[in-house]
Image (cartoon, rainbow, N blue to C red; front, side, top):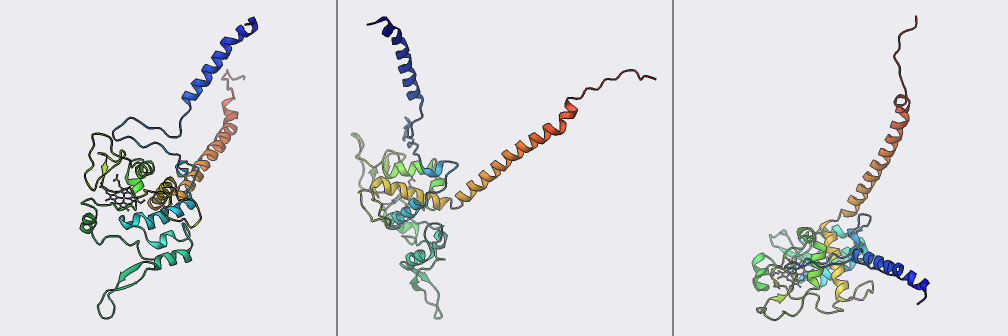
Length: 276
Ligand code: HEC
């Protein structure tokens, strides 16, 4: 080896070391922690950034997933069809969707309750008439109302996403009773909800996106997040405006302060005996 290359060697080693150090320091997008139950990985949901809004196309697809899959067991009582108008879907499409449901209304002139097609002011219909019926149909477990579920859970977006994709065969030593399913992200590891997104292509998205399991999970989580915080975008926008106003205000006041006081701060006053 020439003396020149020998000279280069430590330098190259140092460069390689620096590169591997940088790689080990770079924050991974998703990481798992050793906790029981495992903390869900931190997924890079668009909506998490302070500069980003809800991802509306995904929310729109998520509503389809909710309607066609989750709504068979989970209610969303705090949502009304009108809430989605012009945020998620145009008014005409929402009217169409609402009219696909039968809603009990009344009493009419004869004191009878009657059924009519849904209209925009109706709430999302619940799958079960009461808690007992819901529990009876689900082996004693109550499917929670999903209206504000992403905010109800710690790291709700990541948790629900990880939960929906976390179903697997129970490991050796864990017996899942009939009606319980193994899911490491659920506290205790056994959940009474059967894997709702068990196969790719469960539904056909209106916008033609391929409905893989992870796509459906992402979309439904985005929809649940929108449902829990419909005013989220406005809040962030107002926050950003207020922050930038404060920033410019501070800069202007700082400038004004310096120019106003510069004369006084640099002035020197000497008191000497008056010359008579
Ligand atoms: C067959 C009925 C059924 C379907 C369909 C269903 N769930 Fe569930 N879900 C349940 C039941 C039952 C529970 C309560 C589980 C328990 O207590 O062990 C539950 C619980 C949950 C929880 C709460 C978990 C927790 O930690 O408290 C979430 C979130 C959830 N479901 C989301 C969904 C989403 C999203 C969908 C649609 C993609 C869906 N579910 C579809 C029955 C269902």
